[in-house]
Structures are given as structure tokens and as C-alpha cells.
Length: 103
Length: 343
Image (cartoon, rainbow over all chains, first blue to last red):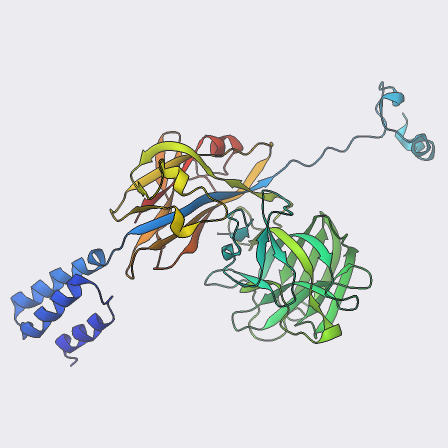
């Protein structure tokens, strides 16, 4: 059978050293001697350890990065019916060699 | 979760890498936003991990702005994919003689697998990589250059060890021997890694870019205490971070700050958002901080992120809006406040 007092004492050594609750629990553990009331007190104190060890948070920078996708640049057709070709940047040689694009 | 990592260096610090050595952040070039990572020595590197679980198939995006090879004869390596045991499965580089993307199994002294696609120097290109780590015939590497496929290899992509990608190392290659290869001198931006899980971000990362959303004004809640102020947001808006010079602080659980934030200008769609917090505890102990969204007059706290007694970045990736459960819209982000909560 493991010794619960020894086990708790060992675990407390792993708790943050400057936790006030740790020192109080350690004292109670050594006084416990398997007394049920003292064990209950230990349990209650252990519940306070996490809160007791909480430290001040300091935040120096906050920002969000958004992965943002621009829409694809629309492909301008080489030829559009009814649109004068001189209004477009159009290489006439392309039209001449791609007759299928001319209606 | 399928977006496993994304970094645009908009914090102005290389510490946004999970770990790094030598690499700096520069505002001289940026594919999107203000900053990019600068690699200008062959020993420099930055790591992005996939968290506690590696994946056999991943998709990477790298905004790459090559500036030089270390010497005229040394190929320029820019990313290497490892398993959790430190085995290098794949190494990607530009060949010094023709600037073509190449991939080797293993390190720079490994087995050449395939090549294709000329990458221009001193301009930004978008390189997307799909890597399926497996023995032949099931392994696969596909590389896109600015959206066009330039490499499609099927075969053995697993060197040894576990058939997974656990961490990507950008920059320095783990085998350097003169002409066998060195690091590419370059800028990198808009890094992203997707796995194949989930309903979104489960394939190619696409050619998107990471744009910053930065506090610009007083928001709905100002529960934290500014060190300098006068307004809270003025102590958390610096890029790069000024750490001990200006910060907000609190040790009261569930205390909230939210801030009005900058807008995204162009039209487009949102793939994912990463909340970045740089913070510390005032002494050794425990304490968490959570990112906050305030959307349509409601607050949404993110995960508890643990701090310790030295300045560090913690982050959380959102693939969908906490308010709607579907993809963010630009209008939603522009109207939102961002913030922090003591946890």
C-alpha cells in the first residue's frame, strides 16, 4: 500500500515553490496522521492551489492575422462581339492566327 | 482542424516561428502586410510544427522572394519536411544553375526526385507544396508555382522513420557540404500549412496572404490596467513588440479588454484567422490568457493559452467565426473588436 501522506508530500514538492497554499498544505500533511478531518482539510486546500499560484498576466502585443484570398483576376477575352478593337490592348496578329475566336 | 499553422510575421518578430535561429523580420519586402522573414545566412532557420500529431499528407504555402544563392555553385534550399523523430523526408530547393524548383528525398545529400518551374529572383512567387509521405508507389509530391503545377512526382517520399510530416523547417538544410547545397538567401512570407482533416482548409492553401488586424481604438471593455496608456489599446498595438516598455496587465480571472481594430481593405474571402498574443506572467507560476472576439455586440472567448515568466507568443487559429460557425467574412472581421481575457 502506498503511503498517502508520503505521496502527497512528494507531489507538493513539484508544485510551484512560491505558492502560499503549498506551505500550508505541507504543514497540515505532516500533522494529519490519517485523521479524517485533517485529510478533508488537505483536500480543500489542494483545491486552492491552482488559484493561489495564479500570477499577473502581462500582454504587450495583440494582433490577428487573416489569411485573405483575393479574387482571381478575371481573364479578359481577346475578342468581344460589339466592342471596337481599338478600345482594347489587342495584338491583331493574335486574332489573325486564332480565327476560331472570331464569330 | 485542418489549418495547422499560418504565419505572416505581422507582429514584426521572428518569434512567431515555433522556434528559430538567426532569421530576422524585415519591412523591406512583404508579399502581404508589412513584414516578411529574412534569411541571409546559411545557418538561419525557422520551424513551424503541426502540433502534437504529425500527418502523412500536408499542404504548404510559401511566399518566396529569392535574392541570392550563397555562392554561384551552391543550390539554394528553402524548406525541409521532418517526422517527429528528426528524419528528413523531403528537401526543396532552387538549382543554382537554372533557378528551377527541385525536390530530394532526405537531406541535401539525398536522392533527387523531380524538378520543374523557374522561380524569378527579386520578386514574390507563391510556392504551394502537397506532400504525401509514403513508400513507393504511394508517395506523392506536387508543387505549384503561382497556381500552375510544375512538379508532380509519384513514388517513394519516405526516407525512413514515421510516414508523417511533423515539422517544417524553413531555411537551413540539415546537411551542408559546400556544393551539395546551402540555404537560399531570400524573404519568406504568408507561410501556411493545411492537413487533410475537416471540412475546410483541407487541401491546397491557395495563393492567399496574411493581413494584419491591429488594435486602433477603445473598445467595449477595458478591464485590464495599462502600464503607460493612456488607453489600453495603445499598450498592445506595437509592431514589433516593445515587451516591458508598454503592456496591459491583470490578475483578476475573466477580466476582459476588447479593442477597435484595423480593417482589411480589398475585397476577397477569408480562409482562416490566427489570433496572436505576446505576453508573460509577472513571476513564476501559472496563468492563462484567452483571445477574444466581440462580434455583433457579443463576446466570444477563445482557448486558454498558458503563459510563463518570459515574453512569448501564444496563438489560436480560427477556421470559422465563433459567432456564425461558418467562414468569416471581411465585413464581419472589419466590424469586430479583438481582445484578451484573463484565464
